[in-house]
Length: 258
Image (cartoon, rainbow, N blue to C red; front, side, top):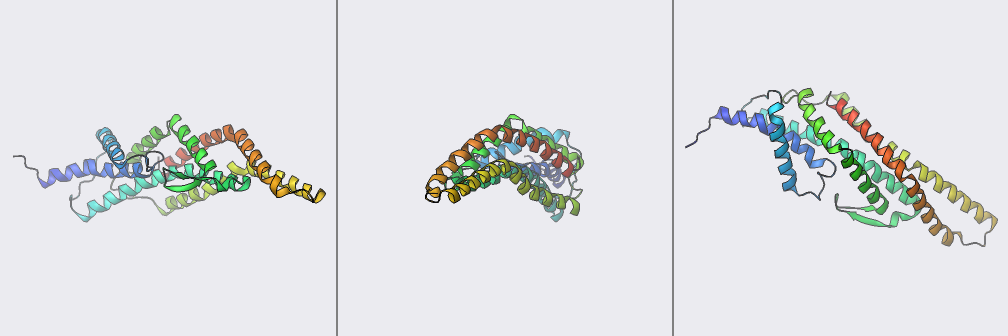
């Protein structure tokens, strides 16, 4: 009969469970894989597969008592690191969701909402459209592979058992969250500016010809012009997402002290 000593069990936990906690934390919240559309069993299998693939190249792990409080703290710390890395990347997708909502409010398309299956919430159609676009770009640029590469690199720059982030690192996370709103405004600014000019033109028409029903005329015209502007700026949005993704991975490497 097979018998395992406490030392062997502790070695297995330190060798596999600690990396698995950080990797599974990433897969819980990262774009596309961390959504509700991907079953939890699939995410679990992917986390196990990646763990088994990267464990042989990882640096030595701490070996506390398997059932001790120190071991639980290390597991929670690794889980938090993976969740934060995935959350930072997910914020980039939410930039375009927010930009789509800003554009929809100005074009009158804010009433056209749909349920986002990845989040389980109602979002405007323009935001859903942009979310599909950036998801495809993320995959086409191998963003998921780059994110896993950053995660593996974090095991060398932030070894398991050496602590987490400092106050300055947490401050940079707050800055990144604030950057999301400014980036969304920059993306939607061309459409917002064009629609502002259209609204000013309707205002001039109202003053020049008060008998015209501007409300009945302006609503469909604004929607058509808004969709046309969105079509013209779609290519630029894809290029902007590529630039933002490069900025994102620069930030994540700085966050893991890489």
